[in-house]
Amino acid sequence: MLYVFALILSLAFIVLGIVRWKIHPFFVLFIAAIGYGFITGMGVPDILNAINEGFGGLMGKIGLIIFFGVVIGTVLEKSGGAMVIAEKMIHVIGEKSIHLAMLLTGYLMSIPVFADSAFIMMNSLNKALSQRAKKSYAGTSVALGLGLFATHVMVPPTPGPIAAAGILKADLGNVILWGIIVSSIALVPSYFFATKIASKTKIPIFLENVKEKGYRPKLWISLLSILVPIFLIVLKSVFDYPDAHLTSNVLYPPISFLGTPVIALLLGVALSLMLPKKLDERVYSATGWFGEALKSAAPIILITGAGGVFGKMLQSSGIAELITENFSDLSIGLFLPFLLAACLKTTQGSSTVALITTASIIAPIMPALGLDSTMMTTMTVLAIGAGSLVVSHANDSFFWVFTQLTGMDVKQGNKTLTLGTLVLGVSAICVIYLISVFVN
Image (tube, rainbow, N blue to C red; front, top):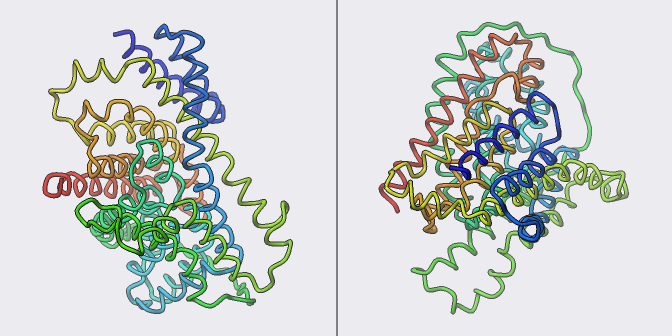
């Protein structure tokens, strides 16, 4: 019981530290990990070893991947490439189907660009199109927000899913492929929620008569830096699949190299350099776009590293064996990571922190839960992502971006975005469970 008590105490400290005391999540996770080690009676050498291996081992695998993913998103955002993609999608789908257009635009944009930034970028366009199409601004905003959330938590190279996949040692190509499938299906009920329920909320539209004109990169160039890395990573996973017997193919060595996530995303960074009108220090200097990307990526990388320390401390303490002995007969499977992530999301607000913390806790007990096969590891990453959707409310920064930009009050935000993230998260875990039953 000491291990369970220490884990509960650590989780309570994590929630209180972030929510009440406003301590940076990195320090909260790091202190919780050390505290857990001492409470469970681990020796000082073991604690120090867990810190070094937990942080260093994980950073060696995914630190650069997270950074390169953020760089691609930053260049897309700053160069106007993200807006080019958004406007093209809306043009193809049509303004009359504005809810669907916003849903799918948000879905694609949040793969490279942070959800908060993407919503800020898209809000003016969403507002103008809602007025022109005479559709509920609340409904289209929720459609955009849920589209952004879906890929934000389930489709790499968004940092949260990358971090969770790294901690759980899941194949990134499988996570991308199944993440796209799961999130796409889960968006179907979310679409009906946006059109039938959220649209009943009435909010006025105040349009600023400001139209920015300037350089816009070509669509195909804008798409390259997103699609090429994803394609290479998924292709490598296909070649690595045991039943495919492709490892002896002459194409395997170059595909294996280029499809390694860090190389694929580095190639994506190189392709993103085609986006700016002029490639100069405004883009690649320490004070330019690359410098901004580093500032954005650094907190996520550090939080992920602290999560790695927490996970390694749990593993080293022997809690996995305890769980195996006492809970192996319980058929809770994927619902434990989902519920744990949901509790952490609801209590402290950040989907990324919920993803990283839950993955760190779940990693040592995967065999006990029957989640250690290749397919189930992928499904576990997605189950954690689904849980980290439930729910966005007043302690989530995105909630305030959403309500302030749309002019909603807190009650309206809860009726639309909060309820919408519940629908999306529950839909996602249902899809994940059904896939795990029929495919595993």
